[in-house]
Length: 272
Image 1 (cartoon, rainbow, N blue to C red):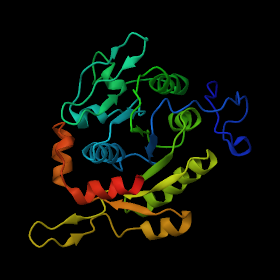
Image 2: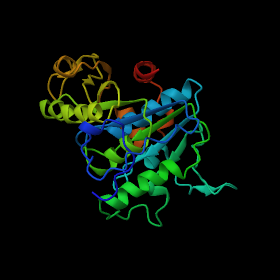
Image 3: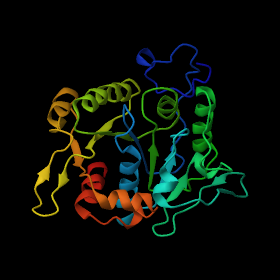
């Protein structure tokens, strides 16, 4: 791996210690709290959880930014309905566009492409370089909260984020299936190896409520959050239901209009 980024300080357990520069992480650039949202596998709704957490924080009056580190599969701009290109300032920094309703700053690869539908066919070193540029060259302007939406897995991009950015912690996203619970362990162990605290687990698509009687139906099977809590010593912050509102608002780019306070408050209260 050519691009080692900047280390976590935990050299003995770092998965990329060979050839590492040993340079400590950069400062937080005036940002009060920085949280990564990740998962060991795709398809669990990680970006949706990131977006909902950003919405919940913004509705509490915090200034919020989202750094979309999923370079090859970016979905944050779609969820927020934003397609404005980043601009520049006098200091030569990239200024991310803000959402119209809550003023959430967004930086994503999709905002830089001539055709947002075009695939990003890059190898690891290039992806890691863009992640570092999103951190080093973007003016996040002293935000209260910066959320980093990680790509799935434990390879180049998540590793670059953890090596480069002084994270305050991580939120891990899973679903009720036993397979997803198994993958949580990989993400939790990576966070431990990189000295990144885990705020807790969000179980997405946990259940669906019957529209007639409000009974909770577990279409993906029973929850495994208890086993995860016991195995890894982390708490469950929220159990998010399968919701047509989340789906429809995300598809239309209006996720900022989501107003289920029980879901938003559980996410925000879990990290504050």
